[in-house]
Length: 158
Image (cartoon, rainbow, N blue to C red; front, side, top):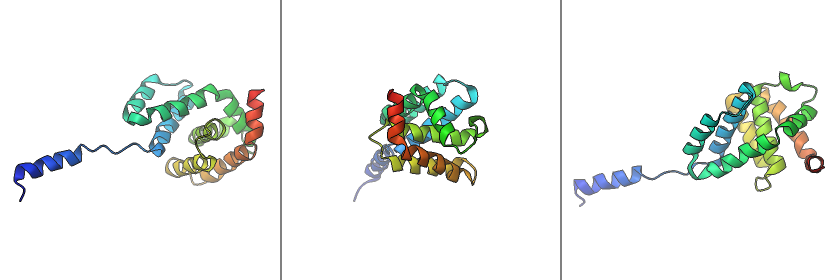
């Protein structure tokens, strides 16, 4: 039989096990910072630093997501305007626009992420953070991006 001290040590060891951060969580942090940029007009470096510290090993993916959006900001806004079926950018909910920008950048600039994963993750986050009709709108815009992906990539390179 184990004595009390051995059981106590086992419990401590079990608590010290750190679960890895999932990419879904990383996307959620990136989405929040994109939203913050849409509201304030600039990237909040303090928020970025805090988020990065919480993400551990996944900070590289987080940085990659944000840099793809930031580096292609104007192009991504043009793409959203094209596929938003008559909505002006100013009329799109900032939450929805943030999700579309994030997913569009994954679709267009991150080959290691399957396109349907980027689409699905955006829709899942929309269910958590946006209105009932937002998923359909986001799906419609991102479907346009998916359909014209090669043309958009070529256009950006020109």
